[in-house]
Image (cartoon, rainbow, N blue to C red):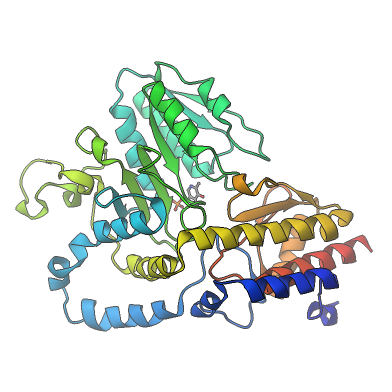
Length: 417
Ligand SMILES: *Cc1c(COP(=O)(O)O)cnc(C)c1O
């Protein structure tokens, strides 16, 4: 078996198609800007932890010697205190469609979700219900349940078809004058289904409710237009398609029109109107800074800045276009090569409703993924039987994807035989 590892190859037409797509790929050169160790044959999990950029290593080292090592505490005044909103504005411009002054960086996704969900619910004191869905990522559901318990609210759960995602009609059916808040993921973390963000947002507004979108699996791979869609609140993480590295902070977006009205629950000194006045009482800052709590994770924002610069050079429309080609290719191979081995595509076939990953299912996937990892082919396993093929457009080539899928075929064929 091990001697077969190296020569896994898809049928000739798909090898040629991958070569052609790489040839035509206007973003192909970006791949070489990432750290690409030889032991990794194919990386298909950039939607869980993006690869690091080569420049980041140098910038982190210079940061230790310069900004931290030499400027020391002076750097707080010189740059660091403003970094949560400076990087927030960069994220807003590069990937969220958000004008400056509405996005802030800090905390983890989980904590930022808690802060903004709690702030939103508190801003609608007479409304008793939150609308959410059972297919959302665990942390989103857990935080929602905790806020509901803490504030005496009821969650109206939508149970969407796991293969697709939440439909506007399913949301509309639960909206009413009791709805305080709707919380959904823009892109489903399992299927990659893209929810109809503009339609759901305006339906919620017609009912007088606020909306919070989780953008973890959309920002940096799917175009988002928060301002144009009149979104109230959004949260996302910076270590997936924004390549911020393990534990990189979250970002929170709050529409400017809500800044004065909303008050978040973790009143800390960094969100205070005058952090260094050291006064007796908490007075929230004006604007987006009031959503900060404690000392921001400065080190962890450096890689995010690097990736945002790359995304801005490439442009989100081009990133999305390549993303669609990558997922189209994965689905074509799944249909032609893997389906005869019992593999089923569990992501939307309509490219307009499909984001940056493709989930395929098979009863043997857990063992298949174990063997793939051993070979240096790294996708994600999602219980019970899902192989999640995450495709970061700026760091993934079609050839890399073809190699990975060839190994999936070889392992499944070997098991069948
Ligand atoms: C990745 C992800 C998270 C992660 O939350 P952390 O607090 O950063 O661990 C939350 N929600 C969704 C939808 C995600 O995809």
